[in-house]
Length: 395
Image (cartoon, rainbow, N blue to C red; front, side, top):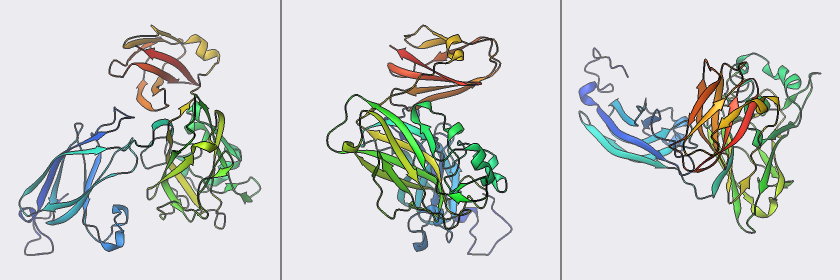
């Protein structure tokens, strides 16, 4: 923040000696994502007015001060006006946000918050599978990294996507199958219709007879849109049901995000089944096709369940070798001479992404070191011209 030192004798604009700083060390604890930490997180404070209803996204009356933490999680918010603030923190990889109230800032002083730890609650059972990247945008989905800013991008939908969408969770190819926006379906003849998205997944083992699994849906945007969810043909959302935060109209204004919202829905275990399951996502609002929409940031299923993760079987998979397998820490991956650049992703048995790295100028092989990971079964996804998934074991 730049202070204008020449603006003197103005009580409404305190200079440096009339302001304070807030310092601390931010960390994140997540039992399902042990690699998640407080580095490079956004930390901000604001005085919340009555109009914001406790949400900094809607705070337009009072000042907000935001900084990014350094790699270790340390932060220093400078030149804050004296007052009582609410602190918020957000981090790519984590849903929702951290909140701390009653932060008091005084003139010419430093408020030291010490160690600020955000413990991600995991009281819904283990993380069974995930879709997308929790970063408050829809950039990771198809057309979401650049095409969204083109005028009339909806004219691409009919030639790019089917209706309904069929997405297989085990394939982890949301960037290829899922659109960046769930709007109405714009047909090639200029008409439009509702657009159902089917999320398909396999469950193995046993399913509890009582209780609920949890479906988390984080929205990167929502505007004038209802949101319905069916699980195996059973509706789990009330009617009508809307995402918790709306506005911004990211679809019409050619963006891939607006205001962020989060919904957690209960799925009774008795409507899930061993074998094939399907979650149907519906956006039934069609009165204003260029406006009605939701954008998904991230979707996950938690519960006392086990999902099947696929391993592709294709010609490329037959030419890739991983050894030793099992290994106690280091795996060597042999690749064909035709491959010069890949991205490797490592998933836990529950489907949680625990590692990702891009490799350039490959000379037939690369090394995967997972000595910091717990022993167990993992799925190594190698993404080049086409994705290949290989099961590996650390012991």
